[in-house]
Amino acid sequence: MNDIQTQQDLYVLVDEFYKKLLADDSISYIFTDVVKIKIEEHLPVLVTFWSQAILGTGGYVKNLTQIHLDINAKEYLSPELFKIWLDHFFSTVDENFKGEKAEQIKTQAVNIGTMMQIKIAQEKGKMM
Image (tube, rainbow, N blue to C red; front, side, top):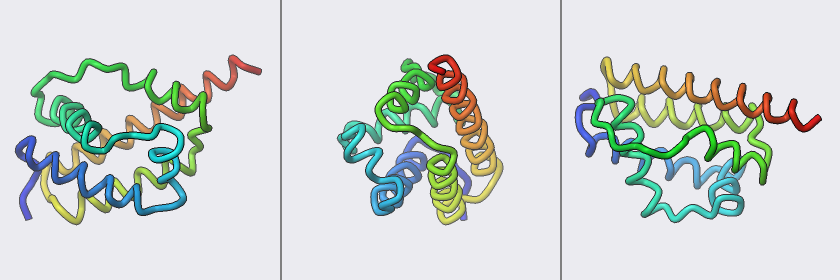
């Protein structure tokens, strides 16, 4: 099994990952009902994000934190949802890739999830 090396590898990863998310009723509603993503438009954005994070290519200019805070304002992004997200992410990485970059992307995903949960908790604290 190869490591993550190219943007095409990342496309395979995010495509397979989103197939899992959208097939899981415990989290799919976030993407289908709350955000109403258009997957064909969303996947290239995710590839750009992960390519910047893992391959150092640059090009991602959106505010990842604000995007998730805006979603959370519509529907609470609970720690349970982050766990489901992370479990699907890890399994998708492990089923498709092995190596330094594969481990790096999993660590990055944990860090992002943790940061998002902290920011969400801070926002919730401001509202009380």
